Image 1 (cartoon, rainbow, N blue to C red):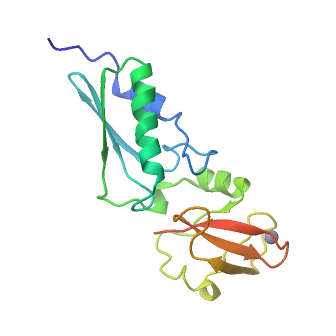
Image 2 (image 1 turned 90 degrees about the vertical axis):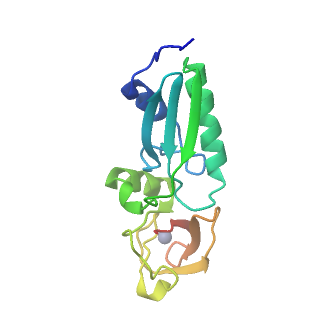
Length: 165
Ligand SMILES: [Zn+2]
């Protein structure tokens, strides 16, 4: 017996748009550009997500959240597929999302192809708190592998920089 699809693609997108990034709880997976597509199947749906960073440990949590949420909302069968092609780019974040990151204390990526992020001298990362560009790279890995840890020389506060790639 085939269970008829009970949700439209828009409804499923609407539900998924309420899932927050477990690493950055002020932005949703949709705002981060991780939510790529929803494909309706006869018995449920397939959700395509793209990780912001290869091997990002948050993806397991996101996958679990997606399945739980949709099942709670009556979608009988949910499959989550991780797509690496095209790979995620910081361009998929809107300027609004970057502003939210900044307010949360994470310096948002300046542009998508900052190959020079390892060389802080050539790339001034502004402090999300005081906007000073007098900052120093402390560690290539901040609270998660997706971020680098910087320290502000003006307000002396450390902050995460969301690495662009
Ligand atoms: Zn500062």
